[in-house]
Length: 221
Image 1 (cartoon, rainbow, N blue to C red):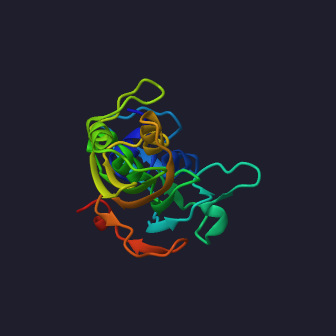
Image 2: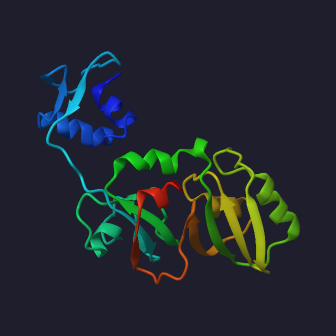
């Protein structure tokens, strides 16, 4: 197993952080400084020297109009409008036209634990449509619909809140999935608010604000 993958599997750091530590000479294998791409086995003695990181976790209420990653000309990202350290990043995405809960952290180890579809972590949204939605279409959303790529969405929970408003709970997260699900049934999404990721809830946090989380709370330990 590559040394960076091994360190990530031991929850010591992310692969990217591992590569940086290797370049800084802080990883020893059998008493010798490790090199990038080195393969290790369970029989090898792997040591981390002089490394400690203070991990932070935040629940953040992303406003509409703000992008989570890679802003284009004229766009603002979460990093642009917050005062977090440069190594704090959003886990996953919430598209520019949507708002609501997103997790921010400097801990690359938890990304897979939150985004891995095999873990079936629930994400809950309040969705306002451009017109009243029929009970038949709600049933179709629950069962799964065919997206523009030909992919069929997994079954999900859908609850009517008003004639044109539904609460949708997903266990997957395709790009702009809810908007594409609605479009497949000839609806447009007017407003999309994410209110929950796993056991973390948005509650009444105002847009643009955040609160600290613990790793235990975030991962439901």
